Image (cartoon, rainbow, N blue to C red; front, side, top):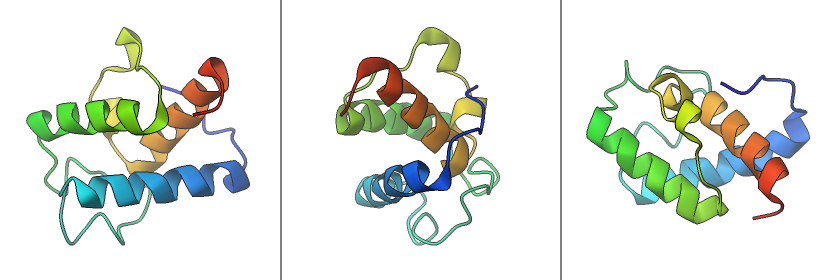
Length: 96
C-alpha cells in the first residue's frame, strides 16, 4: 500500500476526480460525494464486485494499471488510500 507522504495539494484534484468518477459509477450513491476521505468504504457497503468495477474505472480514468500487489481490499479501503495509490502510479507511469 502506498505511503501517505504526498502533499495535500497534489492529492486534492485526484481525490475530487475519484469522487466524481465513483459518483458517476453509482458506487455508494448518496454517500461517496461527501464521505470523509478516510472513511472505510467496506464498512459503508462496498462489495467485492464493486471494487473490481472501481479498479477498472480508476485505471481507465487515470491511465494507470494497478500492479498485482495493489489488487487488495486494503488498496480500496478508503478514498484516501485509493488517492495515494493513483498519485503513486501516475508518478511512476507519467502524467494521465
